[in-house]
Image 1 (cartoon, rainbow, N blue to C red):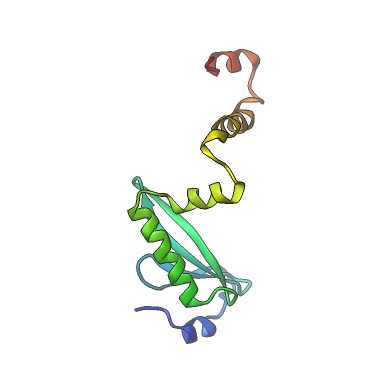
Image 2 (cartoon, helix red, strand yellow):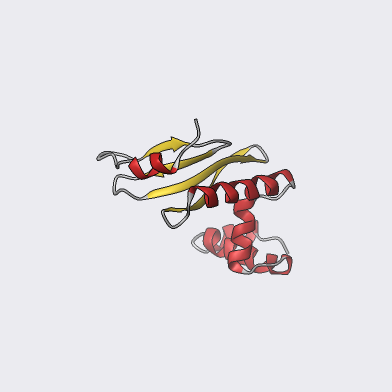
Length: 124
């Protein structure tokens, strides 16, 4: 059954843990113990299960969240990962910034390794 605005308004926080209220087509409302309510969308991309944040209730309405879900679904159908697309737009990255992303990843994963390990794993 689909969510309604009334059901969202009446959703009370559970004292011990967060819970989900299912909508449709992979979208749900996550109700946290502190009372905050988040719209989320579960989807699969290249065989991996992912979750996309759609907004916080009441700032984002149910209709807006569904519109965002439908937009994400169109991106997936077009071969675009919506969460990766959002990250790229947020950082302003382009294909020419691949080197910067690769260097950032390398610094995060290899700078704490020994010098001999770094030499074995660096190409070029």
